[in-house]
Length: 373
Image (cartoon, rainbow, N blue to C red; front, side):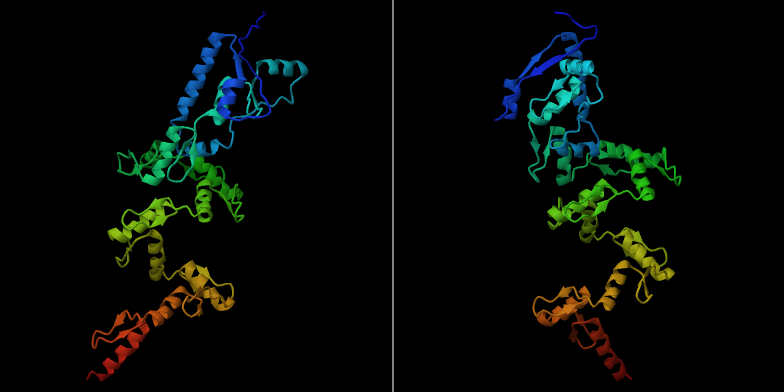
């Protein structure tokens, strides 16, 4: 048998039309002929190193591992540009998948691809998501458990993934090696720069098949999908309430702890979220950035503008379940419901009489003020 100058690894697979089991097919129908054992050893060592590196990928790649089962990311060889001799040589030296008929020139890529069909899937007992490796599953389960084993030695902040800690530590060093060529803004990671550049291009590559909405960030898209699936993986340990994002859970937990970390520099009033502080500060500055296109009236918050627009549209989205009366604002519905429940949370400090609204109490208190000499 004549050997070519360069070492090669020949694999020949014989498949039948019907497949009863992926694993059994691979064992019984895949017959390997290893011509150069030394080259095989090198190839397998390269493959094992590649697989070993997969276990220490960062968060973005670990998340991809769940999709990897149904989405082959190993590139298939394109032979359309080959000549006849090249195609014949390729057929002899290439590796053919017996399960989906894809062809690979690299043995390490071929073996990695075979794992998609034959490797044991690791499933999450909480949400059922599948992963190719146990490391990917372990990393994913931190979403449910809230475990954050990696801590920053500078500020004590904890992270669920090591790569997120490394990225966070750049905040302390001030290093931002990736500049935007359009506006000059600098970023800690190349991924952050890529996402930022979509502000200039308007690109929104992530499309929701349920509602048609587009997103510029993969994280925002995945969070949005939970609206359709109903998934709420973040659970409050105090009351059991569930949330779509970890940020929502963090904010909610301040209800239990009483923490209000955002304080107004003008009056000292404290708030649970930075957005509430920002809205409050407009009371001092007089800023009203949200304007009605119908009448020109301006508002401090977008929610106030949304409520106001219903004056023009006549929309009344809030309905009383007891009597069917509709209201344009949620606060109006809550006040109305007190008619049915009999709740009167506002009491007079002078005579103890109770009222269902603060306006009713204020009007009543004027009577006492008139009576006083």
